[in-house]
Image (cartoon, rainbow, N blue to C red; front, side, top):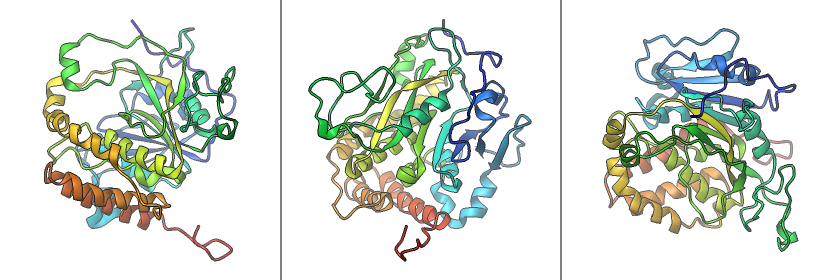
Length: 363
């Protein structure tokens, strides 16, 4: 059975890549003792902790970490009425951290994700691998059978068009999990003891026109390229659905990346997912989504954005409009969600104003 790496097995890298350009966002309801095992990898970076649930509860963070912590009172104070777009009692609240960050890159991880080991027994620096994924191009327009051609020891195979070998900027890096797989509730119920022990040493670009179920527990992205699309929706308290927050963000992000010519990678790095959530609780959160996704996914597969949508916020507002027009018939929830998507962009713009550049044009 797979086991996580210990803190002593996780050696600090010689150089912390992008130390001043990346924030680590963690949603939590508990003390962050799990950071001890990540200390060699995370300590050089700034953390943004988004506390979910009771704001009067004190969250303890191990000494030596540079962090800022926001609870629900802070979210309400900073966003005012627009705080309604941030979920409560759900890990979807993490996207508030994306909004208040001022860094170019974001890595987000759940507090039940530990340091994994590769097949040789070496502790995996997940953050370092995500950074490598983000800093190398993606190849969404033509599939390379050796997967990521920019990894050491790989290249473009015979027959790959030379005109496409430059690739495109990578907007997101989606990592995977050893031990507890990210299953839906029905699969959890029929496979309660299943554990993922398969380590696949591969990174690949998800092809243009192909959607995927994005998981937010081990995810990195270029905030400047795609940040406004990483809205984790309305989930949790007072909402009819849960556990679709990251997937909603992933579907929106992928449609926008395809439209703007950006790439999304999946595969390495692995983390060790330590704790299986309750499948009966999950079923109660997911059951409407299990029905709805049969209409949601075709909606995203068929979504077309106009050519004048040349920025992520414009694309996202257009997607919100299409959600309202085409998914509201599925359930009134989508009408509310579409409004929240617009509120999210308004709040993002308020906290992230676009300043003038020397030639007088908008940045």
